[in-house]
Length: 296
Figure 1: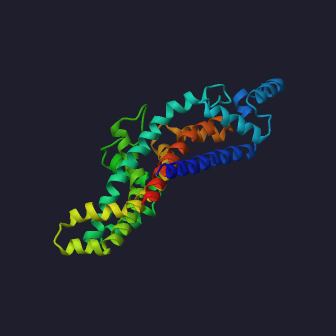
Figure 2: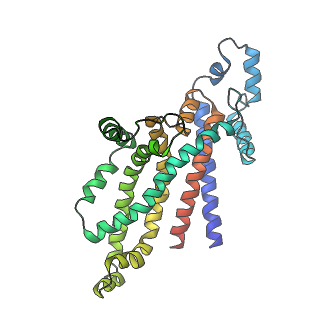
Figure 3: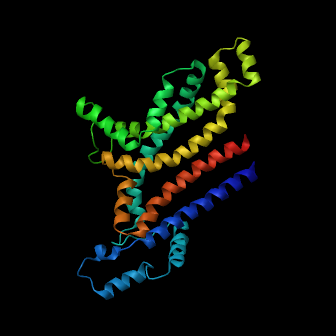
């Protein structure tokens, strides 16, 4: 078990490093110079050269990324092109993104096995079309639809976040982020549960008169857990990326706004610093899912 955990963790750490290296390389290949916007049009060539050297922008990409990664391992994410501490900038926005994605992940994790199990046991004809509809609908479209119905037509909830998000302002963003992934994971859980229901020992338990709910909880879901966990691990990554889109719709001051501004401003340190905690959180969830599948 310990060797499995080390192997899974090592693989995810390697993928984390590769993902951040790819982001850094992509940023270095983009045209333009972020220093022009940071220093303004009246900066001298000497000032630009000095800042280039200070931020390692005059080095080759491998050396620049290696320098950033070495400092990031010690908790130093560097400074932005405007001289602000990246850790402080990211730290002010990260909680909002984590709350949004975390709430959605908890809802998907709790509801999808129950809905998938109910679908398989009851053979409902409603959940099939409903899951297909929401799987095919992007978070952006769901968010706009929720705003139209619950904020504009009914006036029950705010259409956008003003200042720091409160529970009422987060209700629509969380639902918009949850529904597509809930639909997908419900379909996965349904397939896994339906497959387990055909197992001989489960069929025997049902014939013996055990309540279907007890059969589901004690005999079916434990065997279906590896497939469900694998799907939820992938969902964690999709929820974080989807959160960045939903944040833009509801004006949530999270990582989405920072990454958008950093990419357009060619601020490589800020892009890497904003993506690093999100990718690390995704890697951790995927590592847990890999461990559960490996033990099954």
